Length: 198
Image (cartoon, rainbow, N blue to C red; front, side, top):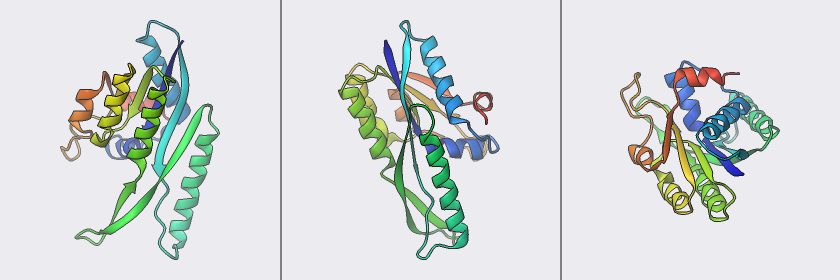
């Protein structure tokens, strides 16, 4: 039986849902089921979902944190804990670093460790021949080395991504090199996301 692992960059899919699709709230169990159904449909042998990995950072808290920051942090922590209770779900947390302020005085945050955690998980599972298919919801070219390693191990890499260019600001929603290196590609349209809405 073939095995599939799903790797979700939480910040990437959140940005798509909020910016491109007017705040669609995703049911992650439905999302994992739908991705499994799509991959199974394209696979001649039976398919089993090995695990879904979700990567994100908890919100930044200043020292000492404001009451608003405490509430936002507690809500995000509760959400991550709820994901951990889903069948075959694993949550990996990075760290959000404050990198200064922009010209308008808004804070600039940078995610740390997310791409590395995702890349290590993907490479380890492929190197140990635990999976045959890897579905990535991501857009960052930093994942290219892990994608290439997966393909060298004979794993089929599926990339689920946003539109090529955002209708909001005209910018690409994913790095084209990542798209080119994927074996299979599925655009996350509004219709797709509405089908897994909670």
